[in-house]
Amino acid sequence: MSITTRAAVVESGGAPFTLSDVVLEEPGPHEALVRMVATGLCHTDLGVASGGLPFPLPGVLGHEGAGVVEAVGSAVTGVAPGDHVLLSFTSCGGCRNCRGGHPAYCATWLPLNLIGGRRADGSSTVSRDGEPLGGHFFGQSSFAERALADERSLVKVDADVPLDSIAPLGCGVQTGVGAVWNVLKPVTGSTVVVLGAGAVGLSAVMAAALTPATTIIAVDKVGERLALAKELGATHTVNAGEADLGEAIASLTGGQGADGIVETTGSVAVLRQGVDALAARGTLVVVGAPPFGTEVSLDVNGLLGGKQIVGLTLGDSETQTLIPALVRMVKEGRLPLHRLISTYPFADIDQAVRDMRAGKTIKPVLTF
Image 1: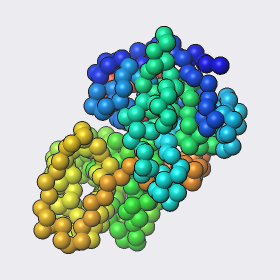
Image 2 (image 1 turned 30 degrees about the horizontal axis):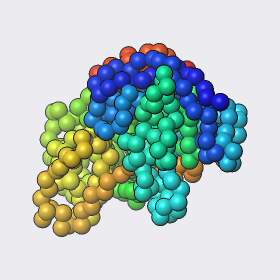
Image 3 (image 1 turned 90 degrees about the vertical axis):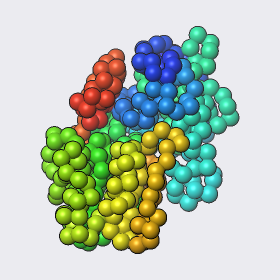
Image 4 (image 1 turned 45 degrees about the horizontal axis):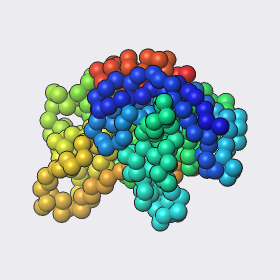
């Protein structure tokens, strides 16, 4: 039996989110119906809504969902009705990268999560007035009171932790944390630089503070965010509107440069500055995503000192392991995620979008 629910629909590129009744298909064998309690709002949602990515519109976005399972498909074994779950990205489960513990690099990641708008078999998960809508966004499309989610998108979590306090773990937070823990892996005495103090960047700062890195430098143009970065574990901050990035990092590292850099801004000019500021054998992790086709020029000779530039999707996370660990750290106060979150009623999604674009809030979380 299909299910009617309320969703925030983007009608076309650049259009606002509008609340509309939509119809969800009944769960397939490997799907679950989830009653949403909260969902984070991410820059990726805004990028797709603006028409910057080829996702089929009209459609339902949302990919940092948190809720309670109401029904499961016939082949679902990992969750049951009543379970509290976080919704993250989906993957095929059978390709080499999925089998090797790197589902964020699934061979079918793009169509399954970002641009396909349908299940792997081409069928639609959501419709309106009998017409299919773009859905299955990150295997969930959680900007709705109920979501039809892939089993591989679901992570069962501790029911004692409020879901609105952990919804951003599904994308933004695990991306920042994974950049540090899974890629940079700082050793004792390392220097970590985080370019951009938004939700992903501040998550990287918090993650770095839980490693043996002794110098953690946050870079941004907004003084309030730099002050928050300091409270969350940064040992130094640089206001990029007032200081030259390369000179500042050289000064703070005794001329050695940074061992690891997390680039979250999506600016190719900032990325280039970051590469130039790396120490010999240093690594820069590219997290920020400019429009498709964007290119950056680099000094090739400057790379010959063993510098590495690594692209990253969703922290290269194995969600069934990482997300429950992060939930526990939130519960115990070791990952103060609440410092980033501002909550909004679901009906106020457009206000949340405006506040996010204006920099008034770091991580909006919509509540149902």
